[in-house]
Length: 254
Image 1 (tube, rainbow, N blue to C red):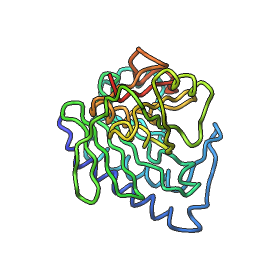
Image 2: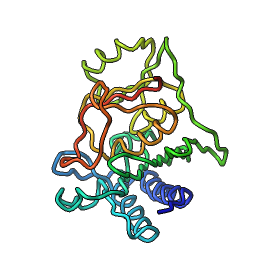
Image 3: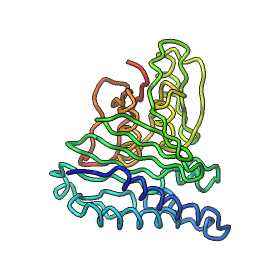
């Protein structure tokens, strides 16, 4: 199956435009529901999901879709998926609600339980990150395309940390890796920071779902980094019976 990356980039941009339309509307942006797990759901989550779902089905009808805002198939029906799309229509809903601009559109292509292609679009900054394990990772801003490569730094490492999910366990892990500085950013942008060498390590102890990490993992690994389960060295796998992730460690060095 041949995937045209430009098609997926355009889908991300269309979804991003729909998100921004709601983000910039003082009435619609304030409408927030809550799902069964108490996570927030905005009109922008729904609008982005509808666009991505419709466009992916139109272009690649043979490829199944698992989306945060879609109906989740029972494991008995999806366990044999060899290739499928894994989508987070609006990653960083809390960042959207807090109006700090650090939210993204995430689309990943999973094959044999690993992300092989990832797209992260930042609507507020019109910035596109793309990772392909065959060809590498890129960042596009205002039409200017640049390759991404991890730092491979051995000392004075920078950790990127969550704005919403700090933990004691995070401190304990980072202490082992010569971390001398920290930056904080929301959503899947943390993966991107490591992929482009602005940070060297990202550890997440708290719960995430598979759609939170897949696109970022593809971008980071295509840029030369690694994503490990727990504190390592197990690989991070997808399409588990439960889509809840374990803790994970992202490294921008060998």
